[in-house]
Image 1 (spheres, rainbow, N blue to C red):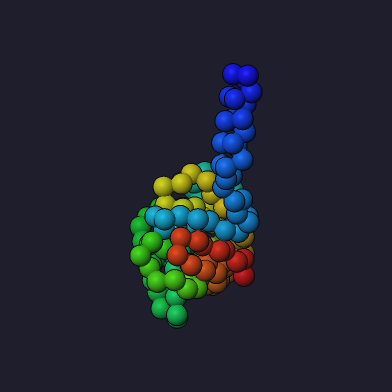
Image 2 (image 1 turned 90 degrees about the horizontal axis):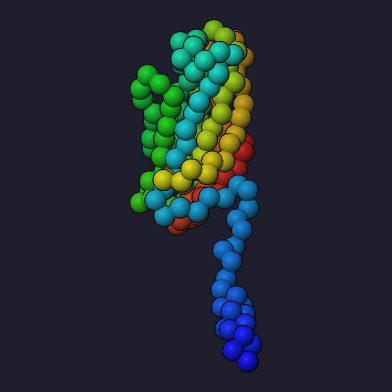
Length: 148
């Protein structure tokens, strides 16, 4: 009888517990905001890639720049948790260089190690080209990513 009682308690906990809803592959939930990191390769090391080409990363909303990555290494922008809901666009520019470049955009909730990865490339002749690559819809703590 004691085991039956324990089993019923356990069954009650299992029945009452709710598994967290599995999100679609293109959705990130985060109360801390969203990070987009741009890394690229020209066929060698990451140091060589940064010497061969300079890519820039921009976060746009309503035709204006919300965040831009500056620095001498790979690029990162953020949609802060306090930013207004709506559509944000991730743009990648082949700023300088004359070689073909493969690049990856890593998207994750701030503080999370789970990345969504989007990949593309530039031709060696694409210097100066800006590509609007992703749309991210922010709705509270939910970020829906659309590959453009």
